[in-house]
Amino acid sequence: MTKPPVAGTTVVSTTVTGAAMTRPDLEVIVRPDIEVVIRPDLEVIVEQENVVRQGSAMSTQVRVAVDDAQRRFAAAGVPSARHDAEELAAFVLGCPRGRVLAAGSFSSGQCVVFSQLVARREARVPLQHLTGSVGFRYLELAVGPGVFVPRPETEVMAGWCVEALLSGMADATKATKAAALAPAPLVIDLCTGSGAIALSIAHEVKNAVVHGVEREPDAFAWARRNTIGSRVTIHQADAAGALADLDGTADLVVSNPPYLPDADRDLVQPEVALHDPAAALWGGHDGLDGPRLVERSARRLLRTGGLLAIEHADQHGPAMTALLAESGAWSDVVVHADLNGRDRFVTARRTAVLADASAPDRAYEAYGVA
Ligand SMILES: C[S@@+](CC[C@H](N)C(=O)[O-])C[C@H]1O[C@@H](n2cnc3c(N)ncnc32)[C@H](O)[C@@H]1O
Image (tube, rainbow, N blue to C red; front, side, top):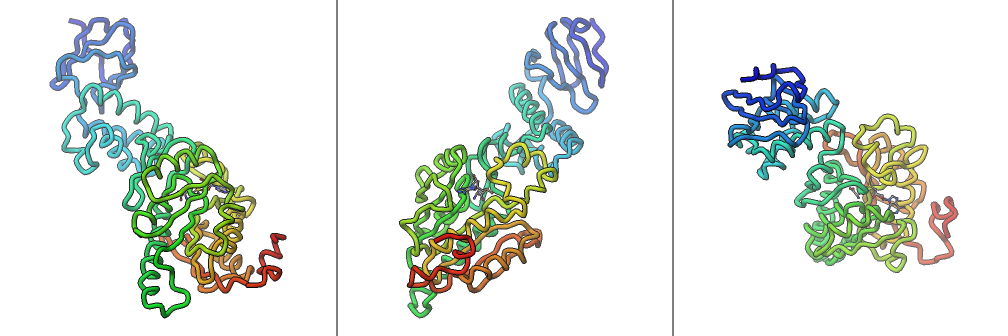
């Protein structure tokens, strides 16, 4: 019998033609036309998909495969190596992440799929592009190339919106607060991307009327897919002029616009630089082009007393406060922290909308917007 290859070596196919390698938990016949790498930490890494397995003996232990994936991810600089290795295993097994290590072994097909996914994650393809979905608050959203992957920090802002709408409705029933929100609030999510914020608000505030606005065709296609069957109406438009027919009527405008300074292009992780759409990221030289645009649109869309929430870069808390103060259109300006304690989003309330359209707010004058 041909001597089995030594762990840790690359075996050229001709040397193992027809060889049967027998291990306590491994039996494999290697086809003559392929190359197989035997690794000490993982019984077999299938370099090509044409390893022929015999019976059920050729199955990689999930725990071993996950440990190996974690090591490879860490070496490749993946920030959450263990988490991602377990998530991919859970995806392949079709079970919750918490049950991965109790799963025993991958089947031969699962082993091949897991190997391919690990290689792609090692190349810094986002985890969510590999699994095709991301959890956002109580929802699971479809994501992939062409759309920004929603982030946990945005969940906090969406939560603030939900709380504001629910408490606003409670106040409105007392009919005592002029600034209280209407019983069926009108909500507009500018720069909606996958629709994450809009969908969460519609899901958690049952009578809200929710619109999402997205300019980019690829992202809009994902928003359309995610909003099918929901109460969110999506519009493919530039946030700058979108939904003019709703001017002065919205109860809440929320947005996570592109807000990274252009100078940060070399600083972001490969998952962001190579896989999030550029239109979702870059906000001009100071990163504030997106927030400025949203503030202007929110100013025309909101009714007196309506609420604004804009996500921004962590260094932009003071700049956002100044931006809102400059327009003279806002009260109750508050900068909120994300889960890491960093400034992440600003909220404000629309002050009285001027009845005289010929007397625009200061920022309208400043930006030359009529
Ligand atoms: C950071 S992503 C946020 C997506 C989503 N709201 C979220 O939080 O996951 C910004 C989104 O704004 C879109 N966008 C950028 N400029 C826009 C504009 N002027 N009008 C409408 N959408 C815009 C981008 O295509 C991208 O989908």
